[in-house]
Image (tube, rainbow, N blue to C red; front, side):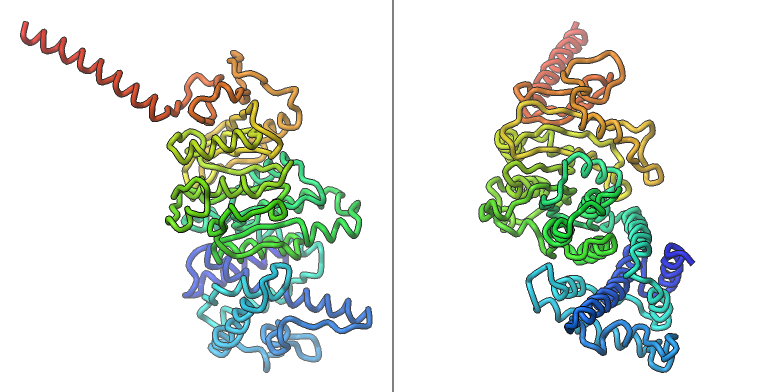
Length: 499
């Protein structure tokens, strides 16, 4: 039976449990069980390697709480030892009262995200077992016990299956949607940021880890892994991927997704990125590449806002300042932002964009179509690209225009972004001006001197109908003009009535 069929069986089993409600819950519960099976296989592999080298491996988990002791103990024939295997209320009591408290206690063991102790503590700190029936849990454990995390082929297949789980969780909408960015967008962003071995790659809002996973695949797939030296592989595994995730669910999903895709030691912390004072960052804290889709539409309290030179309660403006500060000299960034960041001209938005244009090279802005993040959010979004190589001179815009309206069941695909990726890598083929071409065209270029009031919104000159985002001053002028016209018409009407 394929791994997909096994995971489908597990989700069907979990749906019957009274403690599980929706894709978010069953993905969360599958995640912690998968992690413990992975941890068991990982430690077994390390113990085997140590034995061959004539040394001893010190297990992180104590013996009675390892997978083969409590989850699926075996008899002499290698079959499940039904006498030792807990089930029913006994299994649930053991998991809730012994296993989870033990795993949660790891949170105080270390602050190093490279260590297994940190991963265990951070993953289980805010997790709870939601499975009510011990018989349900027993069925799930028996299925997952058959998965082999030491087989590269099986691990690859499982990573794809898990990706589908995350996608289904995101399509459920609600809060779970914020953890999943469409893979087509992530792939295009990764392919246009010139990632190389030795770069540090950072996401300050990791979610399900999509950007870091895609970057790992970019560095290692299509025959690239075989050409890497042992030193390069060690660099990729231990000193390449960095990030933070605020929510416990997002952290679990992200860590699990990265581990299943082959990143054994991501330097990912659990914590609120915005609680850090960006004035404290030094060059050694910064990164070569930043890829992110930070939360937007949220509001932060005054205490958090004080960590930033330009205070605002809008999370998108705080995150943008954070990423600007986290970018190394010569570094490059690609970040998804809501459209409001580009066209709003209130004090905070203007100040941040002024700093961005003057201190960074904003070279590309991609206008994404409405519906990209449905059903989680209907907000129109853009990808903003900038590097730390001097001030902005020209901004190249690309307007992504699928042939149909995007919906939950008709999502964006990589095909919709292929022309953008091609033009990004072939600048001589781009439309180098802001002039109308008289034919269908999705890109144009704007000189920074032509940008008024720091309005960076994408206004496709080739479209017959375009949405114009006016600045407050322009709106006020338009209102006064309308009022004047209304007064003139009212006077004419009064004259007709009096006449």
